[in-house]
Image 1 (cartoon, one colour):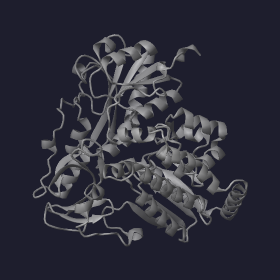
Image 2: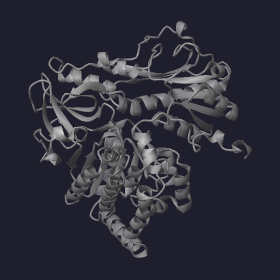
Image 3: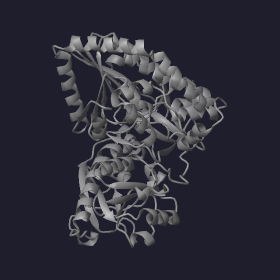
Image 4: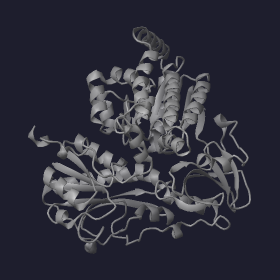
Length: 570
């Protein structure tokens, strides 16, 4: 079928649905929901059989839904209505939730139901639930709805006739309903409210007497202070005391600014707080905020890095490289890089780079420092001689994060993971992380050029088919991690391990003789230098709009295929 995806933005759910529909042979095109007239024009150009709306912030015009079946993906149980569905579900401690696919009609979220898939709720941030449980259920529900649509015999059921509906209309959740009382609320209550607002819109509050929105919260089991007071800092996070404990706040958005690591957003004020570094980070077992962690299981080493939204600043890259160098000295045979729970890595930290320009510094200089720092990290990985390295992708990866993973000997990805192994969407950025060495040797030069040119998301299944990844594993995150450990243990115990390591060293030496890694790096950085310092400001403009969340004014042509001249003539 020809399916138009109508969406507010090309977010993770829209990317996943687009990739999965294309894998199943459907022809898809994407249009951002900018104005009714733009949507009407897209429908006229593409002439879709069906419209799927994974992420909207306003109603589809009647001129469209009255003529074509439009399926709305709503992150709520049957009967649930309103724009804050997941927020309410988290804050109300729901134990079961669902994604419902319903048909657009005049009344918002009130059309007949085509499919609904439920899932168990777990304590966690809204952003993480959305990327994992909601995305998986939405994919299943949309595919089920498409099968029913294709059958031609299915009649969607009106909400009023469904006896199992338990949802209700809920208004947008206000900041008053998210309000934190640091002198009365328990840590669990505060954490739950912050979870329900994570990603967007955050919780309105005050730090150092300044209004801001709070994100990225973690509890601490040991440190205490006067409720409401800020009592410590650690790397990017600030610690605030509650009546029964303390909460680390990793990111904030000050009024009129962008979302930043808390200690950077309040750099001068945070410097006055006591620093509480984790000196024993490799063996810390106490619940606290810890962005880099290490664990050993026999001959296996597990290095995790929980960087918010997968963004890796210059300092984070340097710290992770130091941790990796330390882990390489351990008596292990297989070293696994686990990434974080919501993202494995998305490459350089665009928000921190943008902050450099906001504070009177140079975004170009910070870009240069950041790309060199992540290159140093990739080089440390490539030059691991005594262990087999495995990138275990339990969550999405994008841009430089994909090639950082590919710097490992093996890449094992969870089936639901989405990859974006390209850079050009960020103002025609060329990219580095040794991708010109790592990508062609895995997929071939022609496929590498197509990946970079087309700029399309890649499912884990597609990554396995192309050779970009080495294994695609099923199951939820705990099951995935258990299978990763089992596979790694078998690899470490294999009688051919010594030969594997010898072959790896010989291959690296042979590649270095043909063309040194330093040459690949210099060639890439020559292009990146033009991106950062050249006459074309496209990268700086794209980064600015990205971090400031500027509303889209048009749909990129590589997504809106129906807007290419002659697209339907082939």
